[in-house]
Image 1: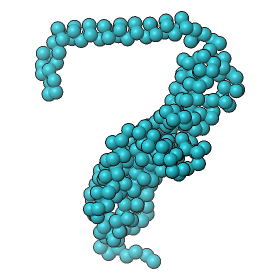
Image 2 (image 1 turned 180 degrees about the vertical axis):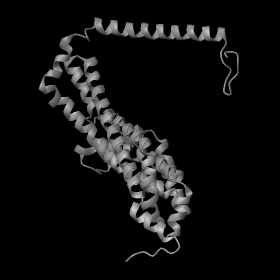
Image 3 (image 1 turned 90 degrees about the vertical axis):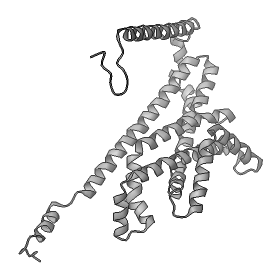
Image 4 (image 1 turned 45 degrees about the vertical axis):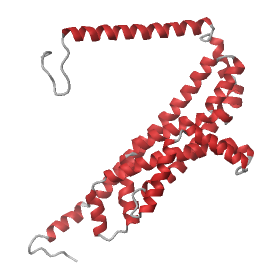
Length: 298
Protein backbone atom coordinates (compact mmCIF):
# COMPACT_ATOMS: atom_id res chain seq x y z
CA UNK A 1 0.00 0.00 0.00
CA UNK A 2 2.81 2.36 0.92
CA UNK A 3 4.54 1.81 -2.41
CA UNK A 4 1.43 2.66 -4.45
CA UNK A 5 1.15 6.07 -6.14
CA UNK A 6 -1.87 8.25 -5.46
CA UNK A 7 -3.46 10.71 -7.85
CA UNK A 8 -1.95 13.75 -6.13
CA UNK A 9 1.40 12.55 -4.86
CA UNK A 10 3.54 9.50 -4.35
CA UNK A 11 3.10 7.83 -1.00
CA UNK A 12 6.29 8.23 1.08
CA UNK A 13 8.46 5.20 1.46
CA UNK A 14 10.15 3.97 4.67
CA UNK A 15 13.05 6.42 4.40
CA UNK A 16 10.78 9.37 3.69
CA UNK A 17 8.51 8.48 6.62
CA UNK A 18 11.53 8.18 8.93
CA UNK A 19 12.83 11.54 7.67
CA UNK A 20 9.42 13.16 8.25
CA UNK A 21 9.30 11.80 11.81
CA UNK A 22 12.78 13.12 12.56
CA UNK A 23 11.87 16.52 11.10
CA UNK A 24 8.68 16.68 13.15
CA UNK A 25 10.48 15.72 16.36
CA UNK A 26 13.23 18.29 15.76
CA UNK A 27 10.64 20.98 15.03
CA UNK A 28 8.68 20.18 18.21
CA UNK A 29 11.90 20.20 20.28
CA UNK A 30 12.90 23.60 18.87
CA UNK A 31 9.45 25.07 19.57
CA UNK A 32 9.36 23.68 23.12
CA UNK A 33 12.88 24.95 23.77
CA UNK A 34 12.00 28.42 22.47
CA UNK A 35 8.85 28.56 24.60
CA UNK A 36 10.75 27.31 27.62
CA UNK A 37 13.40 30.01 27.15
CA UNK A 38 10.74 32.71 26.84
CA UNK A 39 8.91 31.50 29.94
CA UNK A 40 12.19 31.35 31.85
CA UNK A 41 13.13 34.92 30.90
CA UNK A 42 9.67 36.25 31.75
CA UNK A 43 9.70 34.37 35.08
CA UNK A 44 13.13 35.81 35.94
CA UNK A 45 11.73 39.28 35.34
CA UNK A 46 8.78 38.58 37.61
CA UNK A 47 6.09 38.74 34.93
CA UNK A 48 4.34 35.66 36.35
CA UNK A 49 4.26 36.99 39.90
CA UNK A 50 0.79 37.19 41.42
CA UNK A 51 1.14 40.89 42.25
CA UNK A 52 1.46 41.67 38.53
CA UNK A 53 -2.20 40.75 38.18
CA UNK A 54 -3.33 42.78 41.17
CA UNK A 55 -3.93 46.00 39.14
CA UNK A 56 -6.77 44.23 37.36
CA UNK A 57 -8.53 43.76 40.68
CA UNK A 58 -8.52 47.55 41.14
CA UNK A 59 -11.47 49.39 39.64
CA UNK A 60 -9.33 52.36 38.64
CA UNK A 61 -7.39 50.27 36.13
CA UNK A 62 -10.58 49.45 34.29
CA UNK A 63 -12.27 52.84 34.50
CA UNK A 64 -9.10 54.79 33.66
CA UNK A 65 -7.64 52.70 30.83
CA UNK A 66 -9.29 49.44 29.80
CA UNK A 67 -12.96 50.43 29.50
CA UNK A 68 -12.34 53.77 27.71
CA UNK A 69 -10.02 51.94 25.33
CA UNK A 70 -12.60 49.21 24.78
CA UNK A 71 -15.25 51.82 24.06
CA UNK A 72 -12.93 53.46 21.52
CA UNK A 73 -12.33 50.13 19.78
CA UNK A 74 -16.02 49.19 19.65
CA UNK A 75 -17.09 52.67 18.55
CA UNK A 76 -14.63 52.88 15.68
CA UNK A 77 -15.28 49.28 14.60
CA UNK A 78 -19.08 49.62 14.70
CA UNK A 79 -19.23 52.89 12.75
CA UNK A 80 -16.68 51.76 10.16
CA UNK A 81 -18.36 48.35 9.67
CA UNK A 82 -21.80 49.92 9.11
CA UNK A 83 -20.38 52.46 6.65
CA UNK A 84 -18.27 49.80 4.95
CA UNK A 85 -21.33 47.59 4.42
CA UNK A 86 -23.22 50.50 2.84
CA UNK A 87 -20.32 51.59 0.62
CA UNK A 88 -19.49 47.97 -0.20
CA UNK A 89 -23.06 47.30 -1.33
CA UNK A 90 -23.06 50.37 -3.62
CA UNK A 91 -19.63 49.58 -5.07
CA UNK A 92 -20.42 45.89 -5.50
CA UNK A 93 -23.64 46.63 -7.39
CA UNK A 94 -21.90 49.40 -9.30
CA UNK A 95 -19.31 46.94 -10.58
CA UNK A 96 -22.13 44.95 -12.22
CA UNK A 97 -23.95 47.95 -13.65
CA UNK A 98 -25.19 47.96 -17.24
CA UNK A 99 -23.48 51.33 -17.69
CA UNK A 100 -19.81 51.11 -18.54
CA UNK A 101 -18.81 54.36 -16.84
CA UNK A 102 -20.41 53.22 -13.59
CA UNK A 103 -18.51 49.93 -13.75
CA UNK A 104 -15.25 51.76 -14.46
CA UNK A 105 -15.64 54.27 -11.64
CA UNK A 106 -16.69 51.58 -9.15
CA UNK A 107 -13.85 49.31 -10.23
CA UNK A 108 -11.30 52.12 -9.95
CA UNK A 109 -12.42 53.00 -6.42
CA UNK A 110 -12.38 49.37 -5.34
CA UNK A 111 -8.94 48.65 -6.77
CA UNK A 112 -7.35 51.82 -5.37
CA UNK A 113 -8.63 51.57 -1.82
CA UNK A 114 -8.21 47.81 -1.65
CA UNK A 115 -4.57 48.12 -2.66
CA UNK A 116 -3.63 50.92 -0.24
CA UNK A 117 -2.53 49.89 3.27
CA UNK A 118 -5.05 50.86 5.92
CA UNK A 119 -2.45 52.78 7.92
CA UNK A 120 -1.65 55.01 4.94
CA UNK A 121 -5.36 55.76 4.49
CA UNK A 122 -5.62 56.67 8.16
CA UNK A 123 -2.60 58.96 8.07
CA UNK A 124 -3.83 60.57 4.85
CA UNK A 125 -7.23 61.27 6.42
CA UNK A 126 -5.66 62.46 9.65
CA UNK A 127 -3.48 65.12 8.02
CA UNK A 128 -6.15 66.07 5.47
CA UNK A 129 -8.81 66.56 8.13
CA UNK A 130 -6.35 68.45 10.33
CA UNK A 131 -5.14 70.80 7.58
CA UNK A 132 -8.61 71.82 6.38
CA UNK A 133 -10.41 71.45 9.75
CA UNK A 134 -12.87 69.00 8.28
CA UNK A 135 -13.77 67.63 11.71
CA UNK A 136 -13.34 69.03 15.25
CA UNK A 137 -9.88 68.44 16.65
CA UNK A 138 -11.32 66.29 19.45
CA UNK A 139 -12.68 63.84 16.85
CA UNK A 140 -9.72 63.97 14.49
CA UNK A 141 -8.17 60.60 15.31
CA UNK A 142 -11.56 58.89 15.46
CA UNK A 143 -12.53 60.25 12.03
CA UNK A 144 -9.19 59.14 10.56
CA UNK A 145 -9.59 55.60 11.90
CA UNK A 146 -13.16 55.36 10.59
CA UNK A 147 -12.15 56.80 7.21
CA UNK A 148 -9.36 54.27 6.69
CA UNK A 149 -11.33 51.28 7.90
CA UNK A 150 -14.44 52.24 5.94
CA UNK A 151 -12.77 52.68 2.57
CA UNK A 152 -10.53 49.63 2.83
CA UNK A 153 -13.15 47.25 4.17
CA UNK A 154 -15.86 48.72 1.93
CA UNK A 155 -13.73 47.89 -1.11
CA UNK A 156 -13.16 44.33 0.08
CA UNK A 157 -16.85 43.86 0.94
CA UNK A 158 -17.77 45.10 -2.55
CA UNK A 159 -15.76 42.27 -4.06
CA UNK A 160 -17.26 39.75 -1.61
CA UNK A 161 -20.80 40.83 -2.50
CA UNK A 162 -20.04 40.81 -6.22
CA UNK A 163 -18.73 37.26 -5.95
CA UNK A 164 -21.81 36.25 -3.95
CA UNK A 165 -24.23 37.77 -6.46
CA UNK A 166 -22.45 36.14 -9.38
CA UNK A 167 -22.65 32.79 -7.57
CA UNK A 168 -26.47 32.92 -7.48
CA UNK A 169 -27.83 30.61 -10.23
CA UNK A 170 -28.56 32.54 -13.41
CA UNK A 171 -32.02 30.98 -13.60
CA UNK A 172 -33.17 33.12 -10.69
CA UNK A 173 -32.30 36.34 -12.49
CA UNK A 174 -34.08 35.11 -15.59
CA UNK A 175 -37.13 34.09 -13.54
CA UNK A 176 -37.21 37.52 -11.89
CA UNK A 177 -37.02 39.23 -15.29
CA UNK A 178 -39.75 36.99 -16.66
CA UNK A 179 -42.22 38.18 -14.01
CA UNK A 180 -41.42 41.81 -14.80
CA UNK A 181 -39.12 42.81 -11.94
CA UNK A 182 -36.87 45.76 -12.59
CA UNK A 183 -33.14 45.30 -12.06
CA UNK A 184 -33.20 47.22 -8.79
CA UNK A 185 -36.08 45.08 -7.53
CA UNK A 186 -34.35 41.89 -8.65
CA UNK A 187 -31.16 42.95 -6.89
CA UNK A 188 -32.94 43.97 -3.69
CA UNK A 189 -35.47 41.15 -3.45
CA UNK A 190 -33.74 38.18 -5.11
CA UNK A 191 -29.99 38.46 -5.49
CA UNK A 192 -28.70 40.49 -2.53
CA UNK A 193 -30.44 38.42 0.21
CA UNK A 194 -29.04 35.20 -1.21
CA UNK A 195 -25.58 36.68 -1.77
CA UNK A 196 -25.42 38.07 1.77
CA UNK A 197 -26.50 34.74 3.27
CA UNK A 198 -24.00 32.76 1.20
CA UNK A 199 -21.12 35.15 1.83
CA UNK A 200 -21.88 35.85 5.49
CA UNK A 201 -18.82 33.93 6.80
CA UNK A 202 -16.55 36.01 4.53
CA UNK A 203 -18.32 39.21 5.57
CA UNK A 204 -17.89 38.35 9.24
CA UNK A 205 -14.21 37.65 8.67
CA UNK A 206 -13.89 41.12 7.18
CA UNK A 207 -15.68 42.63 10.17
CA UNK A 208 -13.25 40.87 12.50
CA UNK A 209 -10.40 42.37 10.47
CA UNK A 210 -11.96 45.82 10.81
CA UNK A 211 -12.23 45.33 14.55
CA UNK A 212 -8.58 44.35 14.88
CA UNK A 213 -7.35 47.05 12.48
CA UNK A 214 -8.84 49.72 14.72
CA UNK A 215 -5.69 49.17 16.82
CA UNK A 216 -3.74 50.94 14.03
CA UNK A 217 -5.13 54.19 15.41
CA UNK A 218 -2.46 53.77 18.09
CA UNK A 219 0.00 55.28 15.58
CA UNK A 220 -1.57 58.76 15.86
CA UNK A 221 -2.93 58.69 19.37
CA UNK A 222 -6.40 57.22 19.02
CA UNK A 223 -7.50 55.73 22.34
CA UNK A 224 -8.39 52.08 21.77
CA UNK A 225 -8.00 48.99 23.89
CA UNK A 226 -4.49 47.98 22.78
CA UNK A 227 -3.12 51.46 23.41
CA UNK A 228 -4.93 51.60 26.75
CA UNK A 229 -3.49 48.22 27.73
CA UNK A 230 0.05 49.34 26.91
CA UNK A 231 -0.36 52.63 28.79
CA UNK A 232 -1.71 50.70 31.78
CA UNK A 233 1.22 48.28 31.55
CA UNK A 234 3.76 51.11 31.47
CA UNK A 235 2.18 52.59 34.61
CA UNK A 236 2.00 49.33 36.59
CA UNK A 237 5.02 47.61 35.02
CA UNK A 238 3.07 44.47 34.11
CA UNK A 239 3.33 44.21 30.32
CA UNK A 240 2.61 40.49 30.01
CA UNK A 241 -0.56 40.45 32.16
CA UNK A 242 -1.84 43.60 30.43
CA UNK A 243 -1.34 42.17 26.96
CA UNK A 244 -2.93 38.88 28.03
CA UNK A 245 -6.00 40.74 29.33
CA UNK A 246 -6.24 42.78 26.11
CA UNK A 247 -5.89 39.60 24.03
CA UNK A 248 -8.66 37.90 26.02
CA UNK A 249 -10.94 40.92 25.51
CA UNK A 250 -10.35 40.87 21.74
CA UNK A 251 -10.93 37.11 21.57
CA UNK A 252 -14.20 37.40 23.50
CA UNK A 253 -15.44 40.21 21.24
CA UNK A 254 -14.59 38.25 18.11
CA UNK A 255 -16.26 35.11 19.49
CA UNK A 256 -19.40 37.14 20.17
CA UNK A 257 -19.29 38.59 16.66
CA UNK A 258 -18.86 35.14 15.12
CA UNK A 259 -21.66 33.73 17.30
CA UNK A 260 -24.00 36.52 16.22
CA UNK A 261 -23.10 35.89 12.59
CA UNK A 262 -23.83 32.18 12.92
CA UNK A 263 -27.17 32.97 14.59
CA UNK A 264 -28.04 35.47 11.86
CA UNK A 265 -27.08 33.00 9.14
CA UNK A 266 -29.29 30.28 10.64
CA UNK A 267 -32.19 32.74 10.89
CA UNK A 268 -31.79 33.85 7.29
CA UNK A 269 -31.60 30.30 5.97
CA UNK A 270 -34.58 29.20 8.10
CA UNK A 271 -36.60 32.23 6.98
CA UNK A 272 -35.86 31.50 3.35
CA UNK A 273 -36.92 27.88 3.69
CA UNK A 274 -40.20 29.00 5.29
CA UNK A 275 -40.76 31.52 2.52
CA UNK A 276 -40.08 29.02 -0.20
CA UNK A 277 -42.08 26.19 1.40
CA UNK A 278 -45.54 26.00 -0.26
CA UNK A 279 -48.71 25.85 1.81
CA UNK A 280 -49.76 22.15 1.77
CA UNK A 281 -53.45 23.00 1.30
CA UNK A 282 -52.75 25.40 -1.54
CA UNK A 283 -50.39 22.94 -3.18
CA UNK A 284 -52.97 20.20 -2.93
CA UNK A 285 -55.67 22.38 -4.50
CA UNK A 286 -53.34 23.43 -7.30
CA UNK A 287 -52.53 19.79 -7.95
CA UNK A 288 -56.20 18.78 -7.98
CA UNK A 289 -57.03 21.59 -10.40
CA UNK A 290 -54.95 19.80 -12.98
CA UNK A 291 -57.03 16.64 -12.59
CA UNK A 292 -59.70 16.39 -15.35
CA UNK A 293 -63.21 16.78 -13.97
CA UNK A 294 -62.12 18.54 -10.74
CA UNK A 295 -63.98 21.79 -10.03
CA UNK A 296 -62.72 24.12 -7.32
CA UNK A 297 -65.46 24.88 -4.80
CA UNK A 298 -66.18 28.54 -4.28
